[in-house]
Length: 420
Image (cartoon, rainbow, N blue to C red):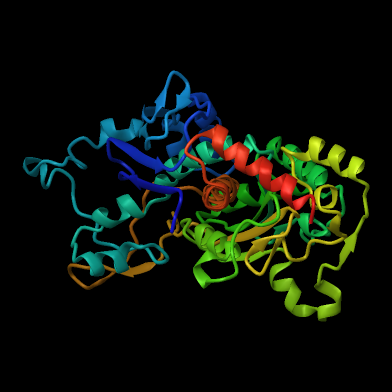
C-alpha cells in the first residue's frame, strides 16, 4: 500500500505540466518559493540545451494549501510551458488543427519513439515523444520539493552530486558515503555544498574543469554525454522499510524510483557493484556498541530528536557504510547512499541511422532540440524521486493526518528505540 501517491500529466510542448500529490499531512508550511528553488536547480548545469533559455520554471499551487499551510487534501501544481506559444496549433487538443505541422516519422535510436509508436499504433511519433520527454521531470522535481520540505521537519536531508561525466571521473573516488564514521553526515553535506557551486554539480574543482572541457568538445562534435551521480539521505532513523514482502523493501523501492527517470540505466545502493569484487569479511558493516547512562541517553535523545543518529540514540553504530544505510530492505540509521548512471542523451545533432515508419526506407533519425549533457539535472531529479520514496516509507511507519500527529508518533518511536 502506498501512503503517498503522486501523478504527473502534460506534454513537453503542451500548455502546462500538472502534478497531484496526496498524503502530505496537514499543517506543513509550504510556499511556491520552496518548490521553485529546486526547479531552478534542475534547469541549471553546463551542457543543457536551448530549451532552458526559453523556460524559467515556476510552480503554481492550485489546491491543497491554504494561508501558507497544507490542509490534508491533495496538493495540485501547475508549471506553465512558456514554449507553448510556438505550439498552439501543433499541440492543439482540437481536431480542426490537425495537420498544422508535419508528422514525425523518423524514430531516434535510444528513445521511446519506435517502441511507443508500435505500442500505441501511432503514425506520428510526436504523440509519443511529447510525453516520453524528460520535460516531464520538471513536475517530479516540484512534487519532490514538497516531500523534501516535509522531511526537513524531521532533520532528514536529501542531496546529490555528480561524480562522473563521460570518462572523466573524480580522482580517487570510491563512493563518498560508504566510508561510514560519525562524521559521515557532516562530510556528505560539505560535499553537497561544494557541488552546488560547480557548473556541473561536481564537488571537485579540478574535475569540474575537465568535465566542462569534455562537454565543449562534445558540443562541437554534435554528440552527447552521460555520467554518474550520487544521492545521499541523512538523518533517516533506523526502521523505515520492511523485509516481509519483496515490494516493501526500501532499497527495491528506491531503485525502481531512480530507474523510472528518463535515460537512467543502472542503480547502486551503498558500495554497489564494487561489493562483488571483495570477500564478505571486507564489505560487511561490523556492529559496535557504546554503553551510556540514562542521563547520557536523555541528553543524546534531546539533541538528536530531529536529526537521528544510530550511535547517539541506540548505542549501536558502524564504522563503515558499505550497505548504504539499508540492510534487509530496512534503514539501519546510517546515511542512505544511492548511485545512478545516465546514458548519453539519444537525440543527436550528428544523426544516427534509422527507418522511416511510413515508407520503411532508410533515413537519418529526427532531431529535436535537446541537451548535450543532463547529468547535473538528473541528480536533482534523483533527489526528488528519493525524497518522494522516503516520505512514503516515513508515513508508512509513522502515519498521521496532521504534522502534529506525525511528529508525536515519530518522537515516541525515537524515545522508544533509545531504550533498546
